[in-house]
Image (cartoon, helix red, strand yellow):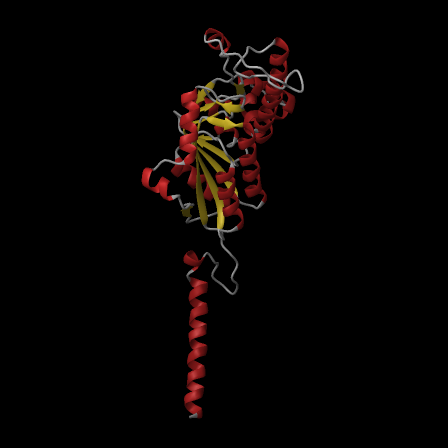
Length: 319
């Protein structure tokens, strides 16, 4: 009986040793380094898609924070961007989430798709590297606000709005009347401020690449280019125009040409990952969206398009 008990304990000990050895050697599956310890290996590259108009930052920020805080082994994130832009605050919040990844030692690479313009380019700026196809439409650095003036139509049908307001500018931009010169000056001041913020992000986040491009253009050493010259250089083409991916690389807005696969390879190289495991994030969808394939964001976008205006919202839009 005693001998049987001893054999049983030896068997259990051997099973434990084999299990530990298995965990220590099957490092790719468990994301651990083989050896005496269990140091976590960051062998995952997460791909996060930013598609269509950047209307609300909530989903993107949630996904980026999920990879930062809840997924062990993520060494790099690739932002797959296919967007003409969107709201100013939405783009800024996504940029903050991207910076949060970098602060957590997670490499970030932006892969620009068919269109990554205005706000679509803005959210790419904090990335460690930006990869674009030669034919990508990008750039469009600028700010726009659209309003609708229906005063003439309202006059024809005899409809008049009576407004009671607390101050001169409270109903500025309303569709029932034309803007005054003073109202336009107020909005222009806001636009200029937000535009300056956009230029600052490009200058700060892309400083090295822009300095290299400007030095090549001027045919002088890079060390002779200061930050003020870089800012003036950026402003010289930040008038809303779009560029191809190839032209953007020439200007210093993009680091290299290639598609999503190339961006994944670049991200893995930066993070020191030899054999990357590519992962994506899937969210549960409401039943109605699962049946129709149409989300609430799609419906809101359709109504905005049909109404033909974005109200008084200020945004980083390409067109």
